[in-house]
Image (cartoon, rainbow, N blue to C red; front, side, top):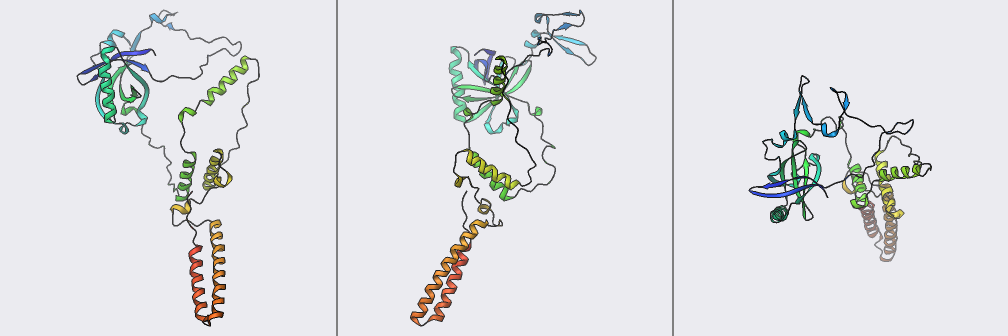
Length: 339
């Protein structure tokens, strides 16, 4: 991999020569601008306003436009001689737990490659120190004309650096949340939990860019003089009126998509599992009532037979009825079932 920046990591009085390498690459499909009438390329040429002629890349430099429109030339020598310790150094300023870094601050990612044999020992020292501390290093460095923040962490046997935005570059999410008072019921949270559990985890290696693949199919078809594939008809959308029904359908569809049978695909009464004020499901109640009635009938019959034989019918019949009522009341209560 080609390095984009050479410098050193400053770790106290320890200096580690390194090369900066891009850790990511883009696989996006690039398009060219064309003239729609004849397919000719559209190109942008750079002209000097004073001489009214096209200039080459070697003739182009940098300049800062002042408030009154005056252009102040800035050369590469001016920038390379800035009085900053981070001009060619990744200066570590602190070590913090990784969860202290807000993901919103994350920017581009780089690998830090040890530059030459003298860098091997201090590079390994920093890597092992980061591993043992379970912390990340916060650093300052200069790249592409500006000073930046960076976060150093261990990836495999290498040290990676994530560029970080300055805290004042991250916008606050004010005014983005719903401004109305919304109440989320426990039953809805239970179903949302069930949906999350059903979807489960995923191996990121199994995910791929379906949009890019579709664009490649279109390009291949048109290059071969064939009609490009047609997009499927979009599903009819509608306003969700019943959130509970939508969640239940989502859980059922997610389970069926994972190959579970119809019994497992049924949405179980999760609300009764976590909240006491939720009403029991009708299906469970019917089963419990039917069982209780059969049990009561059996016990009543046994009580009558016992009365005829012993001659103490009244007392035992009363006791049997009382027992049957208690059994009915006890078994009518639906049992809580896990999802």
